[in-house]
Length: 293
Image 1: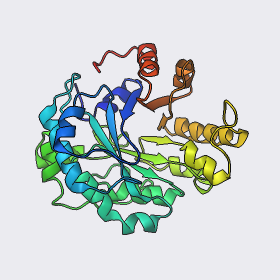
Image 2: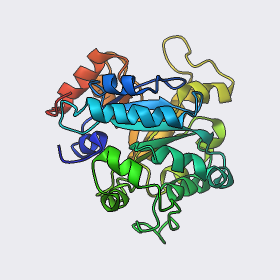
Image 3: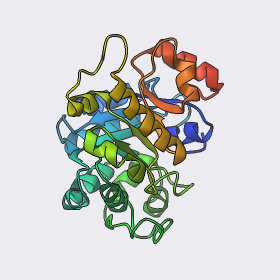
Image 4: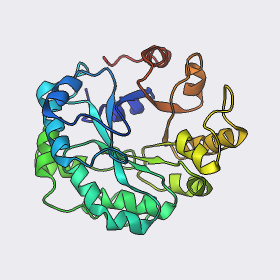
């Protein structure tokens, strides 16, 4: 174990990482935290876009993860990434809802996923509100100074097992800051977002992104599946977002398809859900994973 965030450690080794969790609801209790500390997934996704914005529950869940740990890989906890309720339709929407990001990060999570990201300006605002002003890498080169406030470091530092001063340094966005432990992700999942995908994914400070096929299909007025595959417009959207991720060193998130795991790895898929343990095992073996699960 060399990092606080297990997913960062895996991606640095060019390994696939897998998440577990619901997009619309998750039992945020201390007891479930203790239970989920033993998950074979690499991170836990907590959906607050559609699920409850439950900060008291998240606080107890994180404490349960700590008390149930460490993980078999030697990390204090599995990584935890929260889907924020606010959507990325504009920079104004992000800045008006800065409180959401401060509350989520203040519970000691390891990342945030922003849904329906429609513009580069929204992405820039997202990165800035998640950073402490002291962390200056990238400022003046596509980013302004961070706005996360002093006073929000003691509680998450305890979850991470570091001092408050260490937390301020480590709670920065990776891979922009090579020593950072926070992962910020984007969902490029509607037709407006698709038109700005290249600009949005070029903003410094983003670690991973997905194309949200369910919402993308709905925004196009299509069914998600056309027979056994995607509608041609859906495939074009997927390819456009995947190419932009690869160009900007952003990990591409997509569900693995049985029998296509090696192909998807070659296409740049590095993060997937843990719905299919067999596919996860194929991908891990192909990549030569040595970290215990």
